[in-house]
Image (cartoon, rainbow, N blue to C red; front, side, top):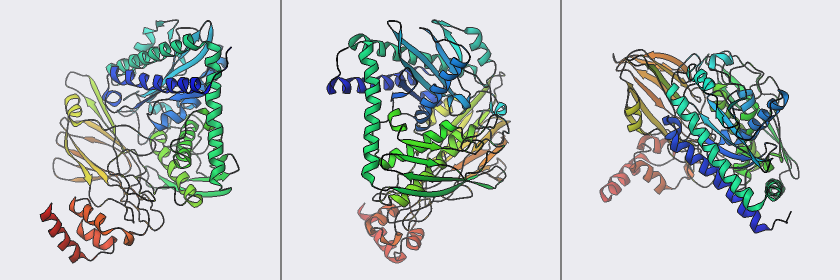
Length: 570
């Protein structure tokens, strides 16, 4: 085998990243559901034969960070069961305690063989809009058992030596509310794997299998060395602790606690002291905890750091078994993936701020604001709509937060209004930024979003799974908290029903659900905010004069005069 020069290694590394990106493009381009096709709720990656992450597309952080955990668990399951991988096989699973997230995320992987040897694994994960369970959308607000969240699929060969198991596909279709979406999205996932396999084989043919395998190893080793050097450069040896809270459907709070210990070239994160697992779906499986923790650390240590399993060698994560961050099956976990993951990020950020006060942002809204609606059409077919809604990101040490954006563990887009109204008996009646929702500071937090959806049929089930209704996104270094989220329904009669952060309710024609998402926390003393920045926010209608004068230490009459003067000029 010839040696690998630096240029060749970099070509192979970037080729692997581009292959992952191409898989993601194919997946989205051939998917049926708006959730994958339009919102891009999916992730693709290449792993080495041992299941270590080599490269991934810039997709969903909670998928990316859990991918290696899921693939390794799947490989161990297959070995334990005596199931061999052969050319042309495709493995499918959605078991959260194996795949690493929640039941909606279906993981598929395909072994890539070259000249008889396994040279890589191509994989992708996609959020299917419905996988059964007690509510449309499968992310229940009150499930007490994993089986109440949907169909659990252990690792199984959906394709064996190139032949699709159509009986298995029919079984899956028969256990979900949206069989057309499930089959179409699953075929899109398989198509993406086939493209990934083809491209990896092209690399193997060009460079040879031995050199390619050595390249995978060198790519991981480089990322490990890079990360260790970055940790060493920080020079912050010691331990730093923080705590934050999640909301139960009953209205109570439970804690997540983290202790970060920096040694010369590595980081240990210990979640001892976090609440024990609960009989609600906010438990986060270990893969989610890994994803959220490593995301937060990478974001602060070096956002441009090459990310693969080499980085994971530098971070040691301890999550007590039976806790909210590492539950024992069959604890329900659907919301742990989407909500608890966000709070883990908040806790790690808060601890990091104690070590690196000028490198950590204030809290973002702290929720994916999950909205699910579903019912039965006049022809007897079922429909399900799922969306996560953006919010305000936390202010940064030298910049404002971003208005109306998906934050931290989600990286999806919104569903276009035209798609919603074409696909479902729904009408979007309001979509705007949420004025005065920012956390005041020298640098203010981002604004939340208001999304209002009217239902056009009777007997529609609404499920909300969110956070930060009882608590608020915290500010840093003198910055104030962002505004809490609010979820409520305005009935056709005009009555208003306030919803908890985890709620299910039946809606009828003409009812409107309002999702008002939280704002980001502020950074720094609000009285130090630049007057022109305050005026800009007032002129753009993002912050009211009353709030600006009260929170930012500016005379109200002066603001009105400047607004009138500058408003005329504009």
